[in-house]
Amino acid sequence: MSRRHVPPVPPLLTARVQRAVTERARRLHLHVGFGEGRRATDVCLAVVKGERALVLRHAADLFEGLGVDQEVVRASQTPEAFELMVALMRPRAERQRRGAEERRASELGDVD
Image (cartoon, rainbow, N blue to C red; front, side):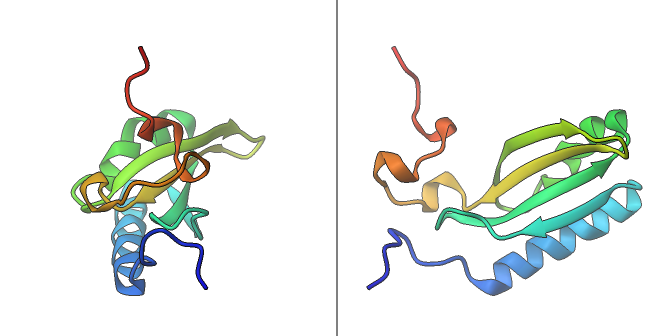
């Protein structure tokens, strides 16, 4: 029995998103790599590498208009380049409610 609370992300969606991000990164002179997301709602993880100013200036452009939500997971500076790891997720409207162990901090809502 699967422990996932939502159906897995269709492989065609993942492939479409990765292809679009790769093409955009190439035009912007950035390097991008992909990994598998840890949550059922993750389409994929994207690691964007390049000069710090370029990565920060164009990160939003890489993911805009793809029909997925994004959240920065980690940012770090290595001797070779600046790295930004971004989780690309199904849009919030398509996600089912989950227990606290599956939520990202951005999904908790406003805290009073």
